[in-house]
Length: 182
Image (cartoon, rainbow, N blue to C red; front, side, top):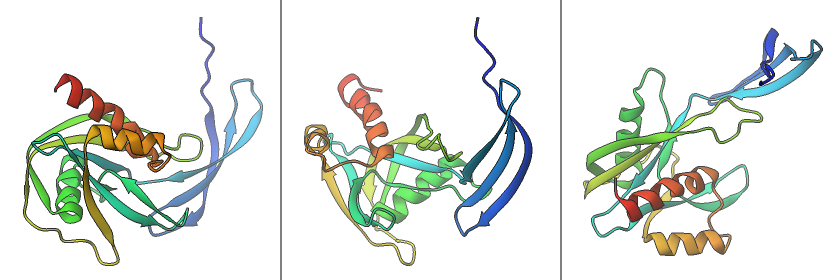
């Protein structure tokens, strides 16, 4: 029989209100009756897109990420705007960032990349039947588009060149789709 592991919120206060992130500090009741403090980030959520070309290669972006201060290789992705259906976010982000539109879309699953300190969720999408129509990057957004086969991207993982968590997680889905079909 499983013990109840749920923590109950006793008090919550916002300690930071940023453009993207909201930071909270909560007092909680622990399963054993004691009190604890939990700090966490509220995030609007995001999408990540496995954009699969007809020849089996996938679209990737190379983009500088300020926090770790380096360029990362990653799948196209982006933040869900308030009130925007996640499917629309995926369609919008693929077009804005890569310049591609897709004829076929499938929602593959959801991941939670930072469960220790954030409520962020990332919805994983597969886009097929791609056609290039031209990118329209957001102001202040700079990236480079590249295509890689599954073999090439897995080599980049094993060499430590691809370390982005959302891309690593979505690669499990990409590998399944490419090797077993969808």
